[in-house]
Length: 76
Image (cartoon, rainbow, N blue to C red; front, side, top):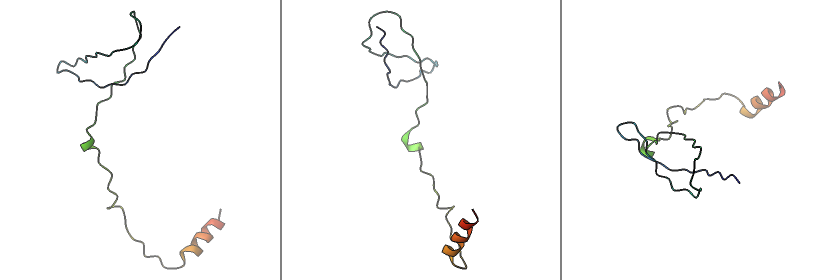
């Protein structure tokens, strides 16, 4: 019976560029196939929420907004 495990962990890349992993598994001794996905960690402080304040504005509408909406819908 083939047993496959998906593990998630984090590590540190040495100055030499080598990544060393020491991961405990419940697999029996022997050869295994390993798939690695390397993704740099982004510090939470660098994740900022977008500021939409500079995009917000005000429209000075002249007329009946609801009537205009209905007119545009009727064009469909």
